Image (cartoon, rainbow, N blue to C red; front, side, top):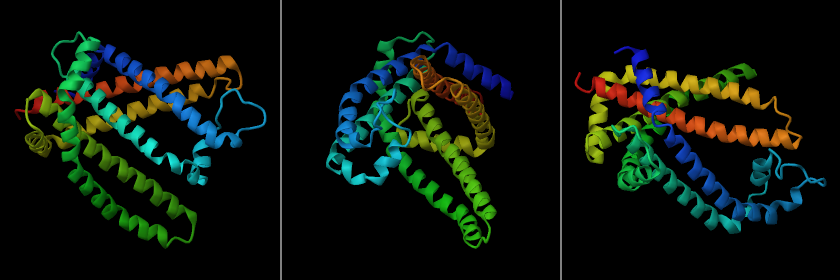
Length: 287
């Protein structure tokens, strides 16, 4: 089957389940609004003295992260709260991912919010176990990255000009991206096999590895192509956002709306990834 056929199959499957993107966006928006009050209160109470004298239209500067990193002791008493919030966020994202995969792999293109939540609850524990089983592969990924980056580190460490440092830095980033996409592909494929084949976690990983043994470069090439498409669209999106007047109320509202639309786009892009991977697996699993 041609590359275009796999892409069309994944895109069509995603568009027929466009409601998934809207459901996930609504859940994320609700959770953001719920978390906004305590986080905003925390930042105001600890970083209020960093505000500009004249109250800006948007409450925080873009260098807020830099301010927090330079004054880490400010948030130390709230470490427990922040860690709890991060843990809850991780669990929620696992739940949403389980619902997303469940609906994307369902033969029924009609998606309801109840079915989405039901799939999230049904596959939640499997997805947690799949992440735990993913940890050894993550360790191999880190070791392999350090091994491949070692010559670049040696080369940049002996450089007498800035160009070797810049080139080595870009090459390390490229290696990191390539290795991570290959690893992410394994996780996605194991989850697809786990749900579509009703397999347990370890057998699903074994089947995924056996499948990738013969089909890795074809599926990886599709994954990288989709990634380049998403990056290109995102770059164009950011270029358009720079055209909005950020210093006015209409401009800020336009930025907020555009940001929410971009979130929906990213979720839809994730659906396309899953759809293309699923299409490729169905057509090649017997080969």
